[in-house]
Structures are given as structure tokens and as C-alpha cells.
Amino acid sequence: MDYAKLVLALNTEKIGPELFQVIVNAPFDQESEVAFMYLGIIVLLLVDVESGTIDRIAMSDSDMAKDIIRVSNIPFEDIRIPLGDKDNIIARAIKTGKPKDTTDWRFIYSPVLKTEEAHINQASSGVSYSAVYPLKISNGGALIFSYFQFEGHIGKEQRDFMKNYTDMVADTLSEHKK
Image 1 (cartoon, helix red, strand yellow):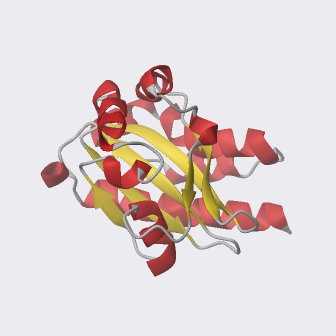
Image 2 (cartoon, helix red, strand yellow; image 1 turned 60 degrees about the horizontal axis):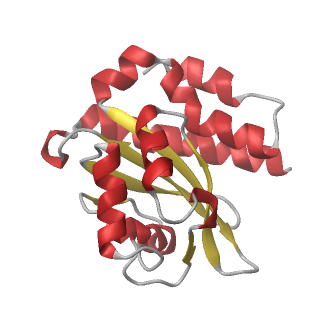
């Protein structure tokens, strides 16, 4: 992954929803690198302190993401996870400040979607493995990286990318808040 290109993409004057779409789509401009990493979807989530929820803010414009939107019983933007939910790995990643991963999306959608609904979303996308990396920003948030690659084949390159990109996004969001 060419991190210099990512820095240029994130160093934008765009704000709000336009910035959020840049965040989830910038890596996909490097088509070969993304394909070699088997990366299919990036989702940006931010904590809404007033409501006590983790809100889905933006999802990459990939074909895999479009398949989820097509089959999901609940619209993407309406899925709000209670910040204190003990079963949801997004809530746990934000609370602990440490990445969490899964091969079962019920742990990403709990308690909003039923297990079967979460499995339908996952099956429609072709995702085998997802990792949640918490954003170190004032109110909290996370990035979900979803791969069409089995967990056992996720290597150092993918893990380094997730960590580095999460740090870059946190810096971008913090800078735009100033």
C-alpha cells in the first residue's frame, strides 16, 4: 500500500460526510494493492455521546458493500450499537482501545440484528474475516476492515495496514475537529 497516496487523499479540505466517504474509499483507489490484500469493505463508526450509541457513518463504495445494503433488513445508517453492549466487538474494541476480530458478523451487528440477519449480510458480501480497530479520537470511534480472505491467511501486511490506516484516520479526524 502506498501510504503517501493515502496521506494525500486524507489531506483534504472536505468536511463531514464528504470527508467520511474519502476515509472509507481512499485505499480502494489503489486497486492492485487492495486486491492483493483481499480487502473488500471499510466502515467508519463514530460514538454519539448524547445517545450513547456507536453510529455507522460511512461505508466504502465497493461491490461487496453494495450487496450488504441491498439485502440488509435495516438501513446502514439506522444501525446504532449501544456503547455499553458487552457482546458487540465494536463496543468492546472502543472500550478496551484494542483491536478485535471475528469471522461471525453477529458480533458486529449485535444487538440490533438477529443472528440470522447478520449472517445473511455477511454471506451476501462474501466476507470471511473482519477486524475492528478503535480510533483514538475524543469521543471514540472505529474502523471495520472486512476481507474476502480467511482469518488464518491474514498476515503482517494486512495487520500493519489496518493499524497504520487507523492511526492516519484518527489524525485526520482530530485535525478536522480543530
